[in-house]
Image (cartoon, rainbow, N blue to C red; front, side, top):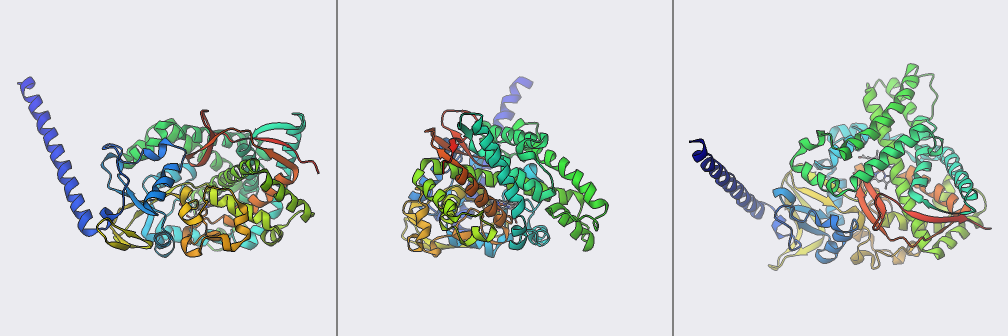
Length: 529
Ligand code: HEM
């Protein structure tokens, strides 16, 4: 009896599930066709029945596949989602981005992939919060990142910049003045040192303290594991099966370890600083927050304050280090740009101060903008629409049926990807978007019209735009310019000839083609002047 009925019940179950899936599929297509404009948006051909188009971007250096789609289909297109997920909208149109990120920011939340990732990496701070909670946290934190507070951080930035320069000089002296280094690692020592002081009055010993080494090791482990094929597919699977996040998978657990390490350190300062908040005169961000919490009776929990510090430490140091690393690599590949930059810095003479960086070093400013255009650390992001909405388009879509769409109706839960990495490299906007050419910034006539660009810092997308734009962008720019000018003043960077590809693992990562793990090798010698 058992042997005869089992195949029938399995067959019945298969027929039932297949019919249910087919009915669901057709209902969704009908809903999509008649209540949204998604079906009219261009879509690349192909895409597997199981993975949709979602594995294709992983097959090449990060951004290359999205860039070719953007070239072919324009700034708005759609992809088949993996594992039966609805079509995904990909948006690089400045009008639609401004609607989602500036005008209607709380109508679009971080996606089910991004939010758990952020929570594991840095905790439930500003980057993780949504809606009213985000508004409250932003009001609490924005006053510690003003232009004036950033200016006051200059001395700490300078101390760390000098320390890492001295360390690299010593390193070169012990290698006959000529060494190939992993540039992002060196930049990470400096930016961690800076955020340690500014964030919670901690000295990371220019990357040499045991805690600094632990953070660097855990970060590298998390990024390296994140580069493996399975880890790169994992977010797509997690979207359908969110419980996977709680399984003991090394790549996922390593992300949590970074947060724990930083929290442990910040907790020591928290205990000291909160014992007597009025007497604590610390200038660092944690002390400032503890004092404000005490004076204004805000009742912010210790956990929340520590998560803010974790967020600043991780998103504040890795991003800036990554962009600096890519810039120095670009300078090694463009010696004429490097020489011109060094000349400007040497001719300036004195040590530039905060205000000098803003107005008195135009070529440094041009190099900064060009690098920020080409190497955004946050290389990709995603949003979910929380309500039915209409997205305005700055560049209309012309459908094969002869219709012109100047806006798109979308449904609640629509998943939207923002391809931040290729977004500011589009040839249709920049002409030569993949060419590192700082000179374009010296002549405003050579820049695209602002209407073709997003509304963030310098009309670039690197720090995003609107109320969720990077809160630390002034500090990032100060660190970036102070470190880059010190490095270019003291060292000469040479191209090693290694072919570099980009990987999206937590942030934008460099990797030598054909080698394992993250690496951006640059040959360094001492500047001779
Ligand atoms: C070159 C360096 C940096 C880059 C490229 C960068 C980029 C970004 C981007 C793109 C976002 C928006 C993410 C999104 O909404 O999906 C963001 C948010 C954020 N950044 Fe930065 N960032 C940098 C440095 C810093 C620094 C130095 C700090 C602070 C110490 C910082 C703190 C934050 C925080 C707290 C948020 C969350 C803001 C919110 O959601 O309201 N970042 N950053």
